[in-house]
Each structure stands twice: as C-alpha cells, then as structure tokens.
Length: 228
Image (tube, rainbow, N blue to C red; front, side, top):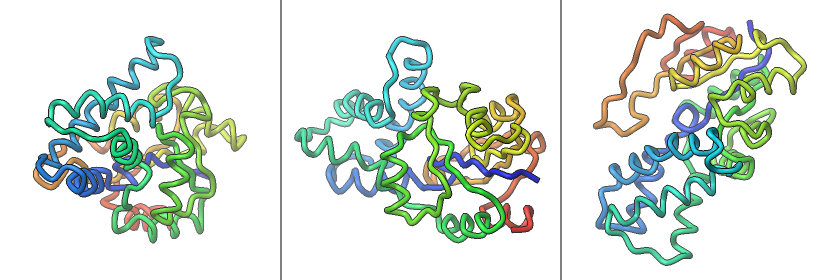
C-alpha cells in the first residue's frame, strides 16, 4: 500500500468543463460555452510544451491560461474588457468539485496523506481548495519543482519532499498519459473514471486500464479498494 496519495486536480478532482461553461456563458451569452471550454483546455498542453522545451521561460499556469485565452477569444468573436478578461482567467481558481470528491478525499485522508500534484500554480490550488472545501494535507504544484508534468522531476519531487521511496507514492488521476509518466518514475498508479470531463456530449476515450495498479469509477470506489 502507498503512504502518499498524490492527486492530479483538473478533471480528476474538479469538474473544469461545467464550471467554465457556466461562468463563460454568464460573461458571453452568445458563445457556445462547451466549445469555448474545450478550446481553452486544448491550448493547455501546447502552452506547457513551450515552457518544457525552453521556448518560454518558467511561466505559471495562470499566465499560460491568459495567453491561451487571448488567443481563442477572437475565434469566438468575443469582446471583453481587460477587467472581464482578468476575472474570466481566474475561473480556474473557482472550479467546482465532482459530487464524490470531498467525501471521497475525506475518507482517503483518514488512512493516507493526500496531496495535490498539479500543474496549477500554488495560489490557484489554494484558492480552489478554499472554494471547493478540498481537504488536502499539503498542496504541491509544478511551481514547487519548476517542472511541469510529465517531467520526472514533478513525480519524484513528491517522494523527495516526504522522504519516501517513489514506490510509496501513488498518483491518482483520470489521465492515462499522466499515470504512465508517473509509472515510469516508479510511482504506483490509480485511474479514476471521469467520462464527462470534456462534457456529457463528448466521448472521452479510454485505453487499457489494466496497466495501472488500481482503476476506480470514483473516489469512494478507490477508498473501498484501499480500505479507507
């Protein structure tokens, strides 16, 4: 059994899609909120790749989100004031948890140390935890390690902080590529099904889940499997 459960956050713990759709449509009633949310998220990995490749210096996710936002607003023919852009960009601080999240995390916390391992910056994760009542023992971020997942430094950094072996850390995530990268670093892995991550009408592909140590349909199911 692991000692530390390190959680991916966007999609695994919080429902970014529905949260962004709702808040974007409040500001821009004429847009397709679902398409807007997915377009914003689609810019996430390419923007991080610019940092990981050295094309951009270290840039926190808040600033990358703003970069992506400025790129996609013209595609949706949306005109916002600077104040509105700043407010919308911070929507990532105000994401709602999935229905099982708080109770599931609380159960897991009773038996394990639970931490974030997210590419979100520290202020974002702290504000989100406050807003959504997420009971973390510690908030860890790529910002701490100055490396975005899937760089090994992010996964191995958790083990270093807690002075445990990588095998004593388990990454909990709904993204197979994240889990595979953690597995390559020696971490245990648990897949959480979030079929509606990109919206209820967009099918989320799922590969061979037997490659991971655990597979669960939600955090309560994982808690059952881990005897929490």
